[in-house]
Length: 394
Ligand code: TGC
Ligand code: FAD
Image (cartoon, rainbow, N blue to C red; front, side, top):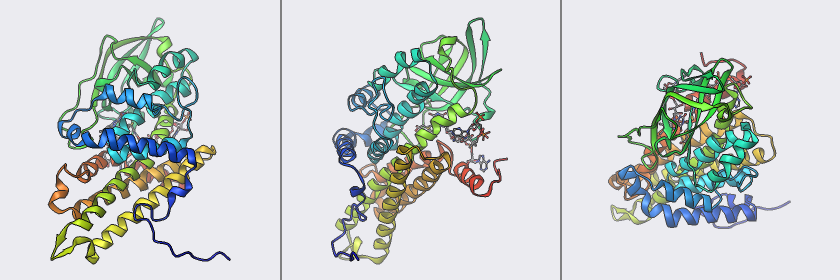
């Protein structure tokens, strides 16, 4: 029988989940962590405050690091495991959810549909330049009146000779105003189809949505499509139903299940350090039972989220992961991250409301993460349907 060992637990990795990573995964994780610590963390609070990001520089840097479409094979993509992609999302989101979004959208929502549903010519044309960061993409599914129910979209595409004419608008589109190309999902006589729309096409506009109080280190836009004409070669040939966009969402939601743990970890680490330094009543606030309770809840939540994410990663790498299991990860890890961020905020007292610490920024960002890529309620209903066999969406 193996016996329990007596060893001092690591406050930053209580269950020693690092031991679950391969050498290659650890190296990749550490490379991204190092990049985030050196190149993102010193600046991101200012970017967030000002509502701007150096998108071209970031795209180039992420391209050089092989992080764009990193889990796709061929066409200049790194071809890593899904778990490695998840770990990169975790480190990026420990920096800021908006930075992780930038990478998720490019890889999971723009490159993935071209890779999965595109023609060989489309793959050759777009993927290498997107992998290197030369070209930035966005993903247009949501509309002002079609959020949780994207199948109700009004944007339409009609054949006109050998071309298509696209009309409509999309709302809340990450990277919209800075994108060189948009994947636009539209209703056609033949079902829901995806189009590759270069942003310099006549009739296409992408005004930025301002005054956001969340995900400020990320560009969010409306897409306007006014008689946008694209040739048939810009239609994604291999899908003609909601399976197209929803397959992309599986990929991005998987990354978010990892990413949210990164944001939570950053909040926990901030609160732990603060609780050790800040004194009230002549004692560190970490010595109070009520504070310790909060710290332990946060630590447990981060460790549990890490285990869930890694489990999903292994299942994806084995070809076993289901959309409902992705919903489990997105649902549970994001709601827990939000709770961790709120708890960390309380430990930091008044300092917790400033941008001097990452906590409030993460907390505000996580309100978006709770909503996009399927709200918490939508993922509840996906899992509810899976366990009862009953549809409660309508
Ligand atoms: P339903 O009628 O059940 O199915 C329609 C077709 O889709 C297939 N399908 C899936 N395929 C792949 N993955 C999934 N998860 C799928 N779920 C369903 C299904 O087999 C069927 O295929 P076919 O070929 O037989 O026609 O679907 P529905 O239209 O009733 O939708 C169900 C529901 C509510 C779960 C879905 O609409 C949903 O997930 N809604 C939430 C919307 C959402 O998540 N939007 C996200 C927008 S993108 C975004 O937020 C980006 S944020 C980016 C960032 O900054 O990180
Ligand atoms: P609604 O669908 O109107 O939901 C409002 C409330 O009603 C929610 O609480 C919801 O859970 C609840 N609800 C809805 N239906 C049901 C039901 N059947 N049962 C119970 N409750 C229900 N979209 C893109 O396509 N591309 C992007 O790049 C993108 N980026 C985004 C970036 C940001 C910063 C944000 C905030 C959003 C982004 N989105 C993007 C849009 C996002 O996916 C939607 O906001 C999300 O799907 C929810 O849609 P909605 O906001 O219209 O809310």
